[in-house]
Length: 469
Image 1: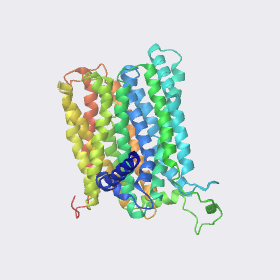
Image 2: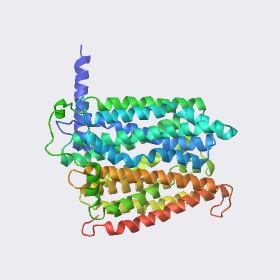
Image 3: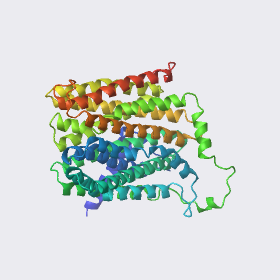
Image 4: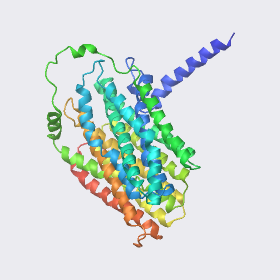
């Protein structure tokens, strides 16, 4: 008889703890309001969680499995991973289209998110079979290679296109639901959930693939497809209000075209230089994305489960950087100084990664990876915040799309360059490391150090010297 009152009392205590301590310590939890409770915001952020799961699968797990376990050349893997990222330039256009979309159901954002989800699901559904066909044909050198290559390319392209559509329009929907003064913090919350999803996925994939087999690989990838579909549908439930009447209301003024919006955005002072700095910094952090795990496997003799945890370590470092940057920037610091600090941290980070090649201490390598994630988080948050603050009135969406397009395209170029250098240097003794098989990797990390310095030079004219960092 007393069980039910006790259960109610316990629930009330848990709710009280969550509302007092949760909003105090959960990053960006103070953006909640009576009109938009934290539970609804967290549910909407499941879109970002699904994006993080898919990104870890592509960049973290599959590149190691395809290169080391399945014997696919790193240059081909880099090209495959670059395909979804090269769809990123259309992010600004997708965001602009979702702003002006007319739907018979009265929605603007939801149809685009559903479309992106289904494209992403379709790519993940047949991806493992395409990868296995590609791997078998590569090893046997038979005609199946001409089937495996385009099929795998299509799978990667579909997953990438789905990620870009759902993430761009999902952030736009989150912006629609919040007040203008809360929008930057909401975007911050979404990206923190992206990192948490990445960490959780990396831990799970490392556990699931500790005993590698082709059958287990198929189960993991297709399970990821079902999970992303489920999360996105839950996230969208009753989020966007249906307004069929908007179809019958003539707008007071015609919406600006994408070209007009883009020209207005680019006309702002130093916009091009900002985008160049974003591209250089992202290229510097991304060039080793597809070779860190193979480097750990081939040079440092780490297992699949251990190297997969590197994605969680990188995401954890980025999460620390993102939370720290949010706190400091909320105090009025210059976002470009924060981004410059991230690039500066990248210098010792990749120095430690290079040093690990001649050492029997894996902790040196893991510390370098953690610092690289921290630097990437500071750099990404700083440049995104600067882009939002300097966007023309009413154009935060296209500004974020431009930032995302440059960042993702640079990631694709970096992955391709990193994979090509790794393949071209195989079998060559360049004298860069204690063991010849580490030479190609050391060359990549050294090039990243040079790009970090170039990023700092590009950032110098952008610093606000009248504002303390």
